[in-house]
Image 1 (tube, helix red, strand yellow):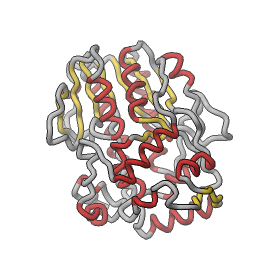
Image 2 (cartoon, rainbow, N blue to C red):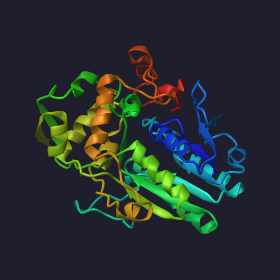
Image 3 (cartoon, rainbow, N blue to C red):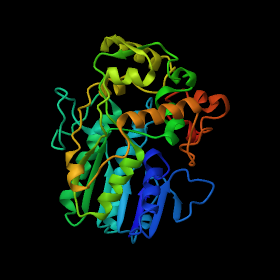
Image 4 (cartoon, rainbow, N blue to C red):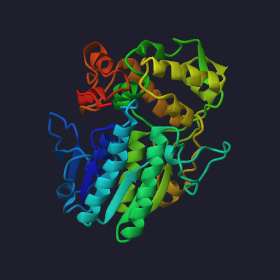
Length: 358
């Protein structure tokens, strides 16, 4: 099997490469990213390309499967740029898949594609994928689902699998996730167990998590099994406020959602934090996922619990851990995080080096 992986240098991408390298059915891997590692990866052909601008059809030529993972979280202060990267970029990937007549497409969506929850009962893949239109991330995830609906109708010969994971954590992604969501002013030492005796949490907070290697295992299974359609991916248990507080070794304090939103909005407006308040508001209304279909059809059994995945990320954040690619590197933000500060915090991705117009 010859496989092309778009977005191969990120959190999920690096885990997918490791899973494919371990699979004897996969004999050729082409890894595509805007920033490729300086050191070669045995068994992987790295290709530097930007899905927004480069010709992608030659990259997909001869492939038996394409795994599309590429996604831009930043710059949140320039939503037109993330739209070009995520929506227009995905349109261009789909055109390349069609031009190369690739028979299988695996796309990693997200719990963020789903409409807000009605309650805490787990939902199956039939839950509406309209996102939350006020947040760029959920709006773009939902729009890409519509692109895939159209592509599926126009290209019935292409087998399409949509993976919809909960929050994806691993130690190697700690530095990247701090840059994307917490920003340069966040002190890592606050994440030591017991460092904060009281943990303020919004009243509506309930979340799920899954380890990156378990998402990669689902992608690997989807490549080799004749399955199609969407699959929810979330590990047990559901992380409510009490469980989160125990992980941090603190006592939870309830913060009204509107107060939490106001604090995040103030930090965002003052360019002290890189994540938009609308994103956090969307996160507070995500549905709880039922992963029964993945268990039944992909034989998917996560190796890590949700608590273990979260603890691994927190350990990585405390230690300043990173990964082997430019996107995951510990020093991507520069010495003393100066590139993150220069970016205007949420104004552009500091790893890209140059600001986004507007």
